[in-house]
Every structure is written in structure tokens, then in C-alpha cells.
Amino acid sequence: MAKYQTVMLDGSELSVKKAAAFIRAGEVVGMPTETVYGLAADAFNENAVSKIFAAKERPADNPLIVHISDLSMITGIAAELPQIAVTCAKRFWPGPLTMVLPKTPNVPLITSGGLNTVGVRMPSHPVARALIDAAGVPLAAPSANLSGSPSPTCAAHVLKDMNGRIPAIIDGGECDAGVESTVICFEDDGVGDGAIKILRPGRITAQMLSEVTPDVRIDKGVLHAVENGAKVASPGMKYKHYAPKAKVTLVEGSARQFAIYVYKHAQPGTVCLVFRDTDIEGLDVPYIVIGDTPEEQAHRLFAALREADETGAAEVFARCPTTEGVGLAVYNRMIRAAAFRVVKP
Ligand code: TXA
Ligand code: MG
Image 1: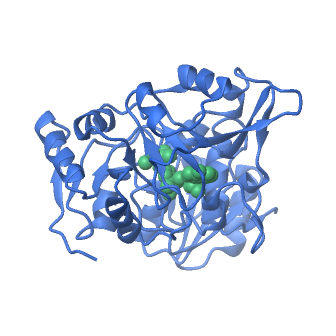
Image 2: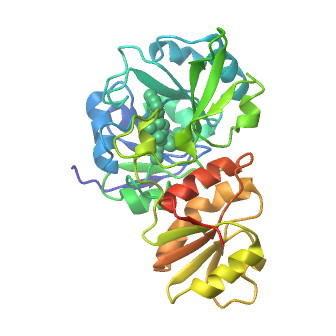
């Protein structure tokens, strides 16, 4: 892989122009979005996209999301746009929603991970939108972490994983959502109307999507581990994800039950991930607070997993989030970080 002197750019117009020049030259740039940082390259340029896979060490069958800044760009990317997709686009774009649609031949198979569908999203982050506009092409962009690591929610996280692997990162501050976009596909519900299936939960919740259709389904891979060799609706479900170096265990139940579990099982090197300071009141165990509401938890989760690693933690005990609303996205990331280890005290 090429070795780069990675430069950190600010979000100014001049910086966006510099970053766009890298993209037009077939290079990869770290890009802020409202969800997490992405590693962006020209979605139509096979060689550029191959550099994304190399920088991330990502398996070739895991497809990338293609980012657009204007609805008119979608015609070159998606071969069909069902009415329900148009409705979703009108309601949720720009924003953290990715729609899986049949792809046009313009989209190289390397971008779609060999599939004949493609995930498309229009981000709302002004720097991401400016970069797409300045580059003049749709941008393929996975999360900017090394494959398997927690997604980056600030430019420093991107630098940590990508230093020397890409030429530039645009620092657009902390990401707002903190979890990646909601990924959906459309299914025939048998009576001719479209149903929405959630492949990866995010800030756009099932409740919000049910304003478009009453038939919102949640793929079983969202809440459960997929068996080895099983056919999956979204290749990302197969892979180990968001995993810090520490062994993570989710503990179901109340703050009190959590505190008792920690009291019984904590060892030197255990760090707790809690909702609020009082979760382990009275215990002398280091802890990281991720917040009370699902929105706060989503915003803080990946940074907290990285912080746990920085403390050198061997083990993390984490409170188990709710699966309501944005909580489903938090739970989905946390059970993967925990390799599906959930205990019920
Ligand atoms: O918020 C986000 O979506 C961020 C920012 C940078 O936009 N991007 C992101 O990309 O999270 P990535 O590559 O880390 O995750 C994309 C997910 C993967 O789980 C992948 O398998 C799924 O979307 N995906 C992409 N294209 C798909 C397709 N054609 N069919 C099914 N799943 C797809
Ligand atoms: Mg990712």
C-alpha cells in the first residue's frame, strides 16, 4: 500500500477544494458526515475504490455506500427508483438514511462488493455535501476506521487508524449522530405496496420509517448473530464489528443489578461503560459514562469504546441499552462490540 504523509485539513472552502483535487486524482480522503467519518473516493473509479478497501483492510465482498449531494445524481447510480424510495428521499434526505437499490452498470462491482444493488445516501453534513459538489462525482465512503474497529466520530480517531494510509483528512468536528446511517431495502409485501426492511438501525428509527409505510420490518441480523455461512441481507452483518481490544460483556437489568454484577466480577483491568455516574455508585472501578438517552448513547458510544482501549482495559462491563427508538442502533453496535456476550444477572 502507498505510504502517505497524511495532512489534516480544516472545513474551509479552500480545504474542501484541496480534498476534491485529491479525489479527482483518484485518491482517498477522510470526510466528516453527520453520522461518522467516512473514507471517500470517486465511486465510479475502480482504482480509487480499491484504495479504500486497502486502507481499511476491508473484505472485498462488503459493499460501500455511495454518497450524493443532489437527488439528480441518483439516476446515474440506481437503475430503478420505486415510489417508496422517492417518498423516503423526500422525507429523510439529506440525512442518515441509506437505501439499497438496483445499481446501474456505471457503478463498478468493486464499489458494490460484487452485488447488483447499491446503497445510496445523501448526507446532511455541510462539508460532506461541499466535497461531493466540488469533486463533481458521487463518493463511495465506508466508515473511516480500520475494518473491525469502532467507527470514528472525530478527526483524531480517523488519524489514529489512517495515518500514513491516506493523503488527507478534513476535520469537520465531532459527528452529531455518532452511529452510522440506517440502512434499508425495499421488499414486496405481497399486495403490491412496498415494505421497508431495516438492515442496519440508526438515527432514522423504525417509528420514523413507519410514517412512510406501516410495514416496517427489522432483519433478524440486526439483533442476532448470523450463523457461519448463512445467507445475509447485508454483508456487513457477517463481520466482527466495532470491537475494542478489551473483552466486552453487556449486562442486562437495572443500575443496581449492574452494580452488583460489577462488584462480584470486576478484576484489575475492568472498566465499566455506564449510562450515568450513579450506575456503579460506591464501587471503586473505573468507568466511562455514555449518557442517559439513546441519542446521547449513540453520540458517545464509539468514542467511549476507543477510550476504554486507551485505558488499557482488558475487560469492559457495559450496561445493556434499550432497543426502543435510537436505542436499537446503540444495542445493535454494542452486541457486536460484545461479540454477542449478554448476561442476565
Ligand atoms: O453513516 C454511514 O452510513 C457511514 C458514513 C460514512 O456515511 N458509512 C458507513 O459505511 O457506515 P460502512 O461501509 O461502514 O457500512 C455500510 C453498511 C455495511 O454494513 C454494508 O454491508 C451495508 O451498509 N451495505 C452497503 N451496500 C449494501 C448493499 N448493496 N446491500 C446490502 N447492504 C449494503
Ligand atoms: Mg463501518
